[in-house]
Image 1: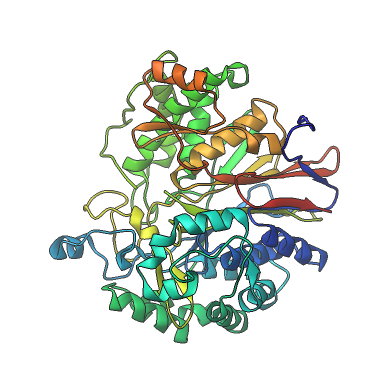
Image 2: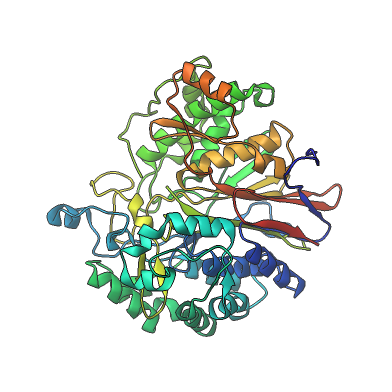
Length: 529
């Protein structure tokens, strides 16, 4: 229970249904959809479509989507991979021959967006409303306007350079070269027209016809290898989730090319430790050491599992996490090593995550992203589609599991999560924040399952992240802890931005209630009824 005399948020408790998103208008859209008779999928899709309008630097229809959906009574969640694929002409040889790299604002960082295909699959196979009905709130906000919220406006201002370099994007997202002010109203009429076309025609309205021609023409003018055939082949896939057991619960993640496997690897490393009894110093140190090991293997071994061999069974094996634990010294920082040995390296970013549990007990965990702030910064001018830059995660060196290739999906940072127990959903959860997300899943779950925090306390808790040669600490972590970590050999620094943002809904079947939390690092909220 929080101290009510201090600023903070309480968990939201509800008896019938609950929603948690990182934007108030998205949460409202989901609640309205639930009250109109929609299920968790209908509500989640309505929410994410709204957020693609009102939080355009974090997500968009020009991005990718993943979800875990646990229908009431299902013993294993359904996993959907809505990540985009590279053009058919994108080969390592082409990049070597032309001496072209993959820059953040390059058309080569743009894979065919997968979000719309994933939304369509979800709505058709698991929803109760048509995609056309689901998209109506987003269409209204794009056409009539939306008010810029504080965190959105702050992010918008720091990401101005991303869109300033593209005249089409600057004309839509900047005012006299500046970000719109917090509290001002923005309208996106061309995006409204595109959403209306998708509502009427389904995914063909995005992947074929004038919208596809507009996206391909813009990318080709900039040197991209994309074709109309690449867009017409776009699809989402139902995939087999990966899982591990932690503190008596089954934790599910989407498989590679996502990084959810890394979260499971860290949980396995932590299992023998009494994490709840550790001091802040010891816990952050342990998390950092487990994180370095898991991410070291992620960067060396993860890729599109359809086209590259990813040793999932080995990385979840007792042998792997025993070896990783054996290289952890609780008194000092150490460099990670590979089991087995392999090559290494990679590239942070902007995403929205939401979760919904409806009155029938269906649970949705959904994440949608354009990767970096405003993605590639490339806007297709007639359709108003801002394109992501997820292909930035690719490598151009042949032979690596994450090497770019025709029709290949890059290693993905965006990961929805689902906790289950005895064949029933317990908690859809997720944490945004680029590469931090796998570590974020571990910190959130450990807060809930090791430290006994409620859903809001677990989201509020200060965060740390050991990646890229440093250990980032949020400002709420005391200086004394920071000094202790430095003494153990960690290259500590204060995180320049808040580490991620998350949502979670906990299903208490014994009490017959739901408790929902939304991260204070964002503008969002949790609501229920």
